[in-house]
Image 1 (cartoon, protein in one colour):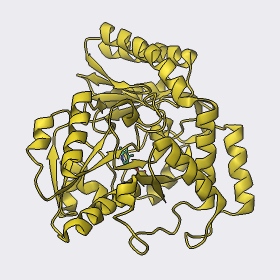
Image 2 (spheres, protein in one colour; image 1 turned 60 degrees about the vertical axis):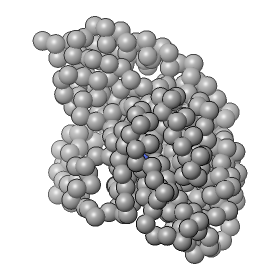
Image 3 (cartoon, protein in one colour; image 1 turned 180 degrees about the horizontal axis):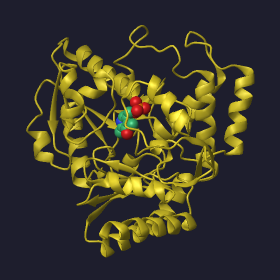
Length: 397
Ligand SMILES: *Cc1c(COP(=O)(O)O)cnc(C)c1O
């Protein structure tokens, strides 16, 4: 293991402080490092591996596509892209989709579509975007511009146009920023990276109403909270709203790098046209074969339904921990996207968890974040509880 870590550190640009283990393979909801140590996965590659590891049906679909055609460019049609597009627009209730290679690129496309929509309306170049504090939308310059964490943005400013930040679940703070130049409001339905903050009904419906009233486009970033993670196919579907533009990625390829931005007919009819946007790889047959198979499995195995059914049990077990340990101040979350707010460093918990065979994440500055594969059951939740209880009990000492 040390040899691999040394080679990596000597050659990879150091933009991550990595955990000192080398992951080798996975099976179900377990991961194994190169020394053969087993880890219960409550991380899923940051919400990516929704179906768990080494799923035969998924693997076979990829293998057969590799033998046919991996890539052909967007200047030709390919069957997996057509199929994936049809399936994705159906489950997302959106009208058109553009496939990207990542979540950040999906945000870039979403922003371009919104800006173009506003430009076609009034011919002006000075439109503004409202984003939220604690938000995370990715590391490319456009996505970074709407990310509500100054430390990520500061060294790279100026970024795109004028972005103003309001507060999550504070409708008045949004209203105060709305003006004639506002072209879009962008938000995660459940904030992930920033600390697991679900939108309240009043807030998200209030934002939706403002957007409807003033023809401002509502962009919902469902990159992390989408695709069953909250117990709904897309998290916004539990509210009485609908976005104009939506982004999805992470779980969409179950490990194959792929994302998408989608839009309703109103935006599709009056924004990006041929020549406005493109990508060499985006939506290639390999990536979209993965998407089509993932969506097929989601439907066949009712993954979102499983999350909805199991989530109360996960919440109950986490609430037991909240009761037991004074340094846990709150549990927040929805479905299999849960956070425990701590008065001690969440990074210490994650490291101790690795020692004891569980992988977890942090969020914000003081939150322990749990993003298990969406296929975990009661046994894995109990196992998580046992390990976490043991980790916490040592912290107490
Ligand atoms: C991860 C994430 C992104 C960025 O996705 P990448 O694939 O890392 O570019 C954007 N928005 C949200 C909500 C995310 O969690």
